[in-house]
Image 1 (spheres, rainbow, N blue to C red):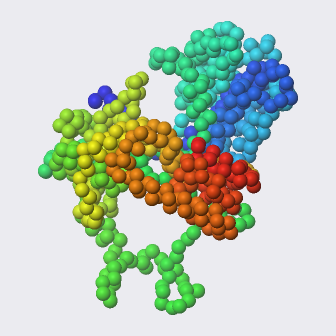
Image 2 (image 1 turned 135 degrees about the vertical axis):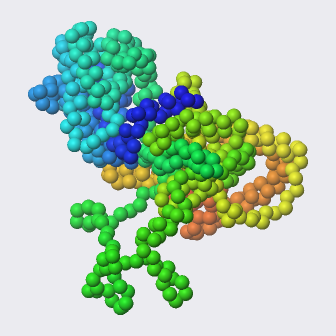
Image 3 (image 1 turned 90 degrees about the horizontal axis):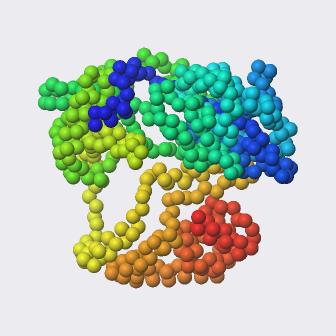
Length: 621
């Protein structure tokens, strides 16, 4: 446990140096593509056809485009650049055979559209615009020159950046042809990049029938100065490229420290340790609109002024200054006025900042429905109180051994009312490779007050029989699958991001975004059809299902008869059931179109069969 906290927190002396200093969160990424003839698909039989999607140049452009699209939504302040090396074309005379296709800049629509046009190019067009150096010149080219050009892009940027990465896509395992001097220059330049906190990651593109051998050159280039294992740099291109080519429409949130405060142990607060609180999960709101200038689309700022409300019109009234305004509470027909200092001091006297431990309860006493807001996570903070890590580790290990949770009163910042919280101990979890999945620490869970509980008037139902219980257990066991909340994106946000992306890129249509919250009924039936049938029989649900089925039949027949009816009465769940039972043919063409619009789809035709196939394919995905 102590070693795990050492690895997570790092050096205690270095940790205190970052106290109250926000590190730059903007990241910088440069895609460095090696333009060999095989990467540009120059050996293709038909050079007038578009380049093959499997060639390295296409994969590099597609990865860069995907990263730009992801960062345009997730982190629009990040910087992305694109550099080509070993090309006949050069961006400047000082950098021969190096073409800076896109400077290091935030993502925008024009850069994404430029990459889309390049993806539609033919090998002949790429050879004419960029070209590839001859074989003799390719072996005389030094990789250190391309690394130096990439470093210059980071240096020339006026924006401060945190993590900086270079992704090198190449299919040549020995770019220098065994030249020792060129290899040594590249290793020296790699050391300079490491000192500048610039990481290099090689994404090998395998040629047909050949193996990419890291031992020829790149192991010496990527080996760390502290003697790390070289095997860690042998990246499977299929896994790494799959990550870069995956579209992720979500904002990237940095896990910053929410507050730093002291934990007081004992009745007389005789022992105090320092902790840092982090918020790991929070709700993502939809994008809100802002007011902009109609002439130049620049955002507008609002200013608020206070005036006396004596007259009906406030035109010409001079705004009040801050010292002319006091806060007050209405009590009957009087106003009780308070100074700002009085309100602040009153709040501070009621609840001083800190976490005050009250006692311990068994873990089983903490119920799942005691959920008020997302939990926070506590780490020891040596910058607040020296020696906190040792006492924090002791308290955590004791709670884990005795299976207890701590109860405490928590006030994280000044002016915040006190909350009753539970300290749930969390043990460190590692994966098969030894990487940390969950760090050790305490989950700070906000507990509800007595007023937060509601009295529910539930109908009286008799106890279930043993047969019903066993049938329910079998059904639940059959439907148990690995689940993580990160697997299901918010469909409302996904549609909003897709619409904004289509508007920014001048798309004619919006990309269809699947709704992962809708259960896959066909897969459920294939997996647990027998268990569901047994459960329905023992719980007497077959009568309810038959009643609902007859209502669906009547509803569908009434829709088929009233062709001129403008409304659509079926819900999405009922429409899915009609698809599963192959009864969509009872709906008319106008009703099928309304069903597609309800599913946020555009009708692909006017024939009834085409509309039925479109709805069926939507629910099959």
